[in-house]
Amino acid sequence: MFAQLFSAAAVFATIAIRTASAIPTISQVGSKFFTSDGNQFYIKGVAYQLTDGDPLVDANQCQLDASLMQQLGANTIRVYHVDASSNHDGCMSAFSDAGIYLFVDLDTFDTAINQVDPMFNQTQLNDFQAVLDAFHGYDNLAGVFVGNEVLNFANGSTAAPYIKAAARDVKAYRNSKGYRSIPVGYSAADIPELRPYLQDFLACGGDASETVDFFSLNAYEWCGTASYTLSGYSQLEANATGYPLPIFFSETGCNTVPPRTFLDQAAIFGSEMVDTWSGAIIYEWIEEANNYGLISYAPEVAATATEGVGGFIRSGTPTPISPDFTNLKNQWATLTPTGIPLSVYSASVSGLSTPACPSSTPNGWLVNGNAALPSLGQTGAATATTASATGVATSGSGASGTASAPSASATKSTANGGREVVGMTIALAIVMLSFIVWL
Image (cartoon, rainbow, N blue to C red; front, side):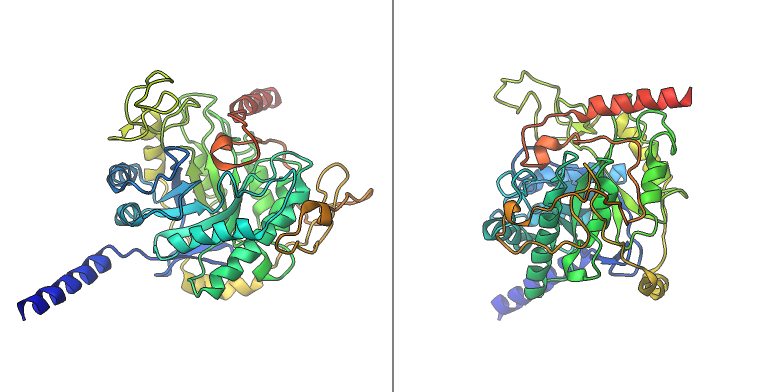
């Protein structure tokens, strides 16, 4: 009898703990994210990839980091690579308890779609499915990426149908398993020749089973004291206005003019952009050689030191990097948009229209119209399209003037080559160009 009572008490306690730590789930409705209790959700996130391995397996480390992220005001992390076979309960619980959601990339260095020789085959799909299987049960899983910066140079657009095919196949698998409608999206490089066309292509066609659920952008355009106009954000907003899906910055945080002041956050969460954009993820949590970190775990060590990787300690008690950490914390503390309740917004969703599929353009966007998506395993050679000699974009959105090109996370988040941080040089050029325009 005592054993039965003890067992019943243990079960009751477990249920109580789970109930106390429950967090509303996130879903996509029209052009916005909403929590399951009906509130619009805005992303205040940080990129969280401590090593090339899985950062969500050390529960103690996650608890330390989640606690400080909570003080920062973050409600989201982005993780680029995970091991689907590992146990993530401890870390996901730690972040959930801190009110922090996860956007996770489904690909790895070995399974990412490659723009040079694009394909999406059963092996890739199996690995994507394995990550979804491992994380679908966590209420604080906000969404998944089927690719990051797959298109990272101007003539790489013939790989775009494979991104869309990956989203199609992942969504079909998600639905076949009876999982909740976890948003499936893409994280794009900021390439002005492609950005508006790719953005529209991934949402066009009118068949929701073949489109992404959200579009996001890795952009480092706003540097130092740049303005909404000089940074190029005004053009990003113009291109995104009326977009039928959630759109947000999956990486941002230019560091070419230190210290970082994160003034762009006031635009993203302010009147200029808050009705269109769903927030931003700051690159990145840990300090590394590229100097984008918000925290460090210990002073820098020799690159050859056994206790670190690349000269940086990857675990321990996080210490804020001053003044960047405080600057971001102060920005976010003053920016608390409430958005629109789902009960009010739902009535307007039917009025959203999908964008026209962009026509091909000479020496630019090479996918013409609503191109048929490749079947699973079909290679790029079998589906390649050519640019129309007179093609004109029909999406209504032109390329904007600035870009940050391959992002600061290039080597972490894509399998398309060993590109280290070229974004800093490009961003510096943007600042110089903005100054010339101002003169």
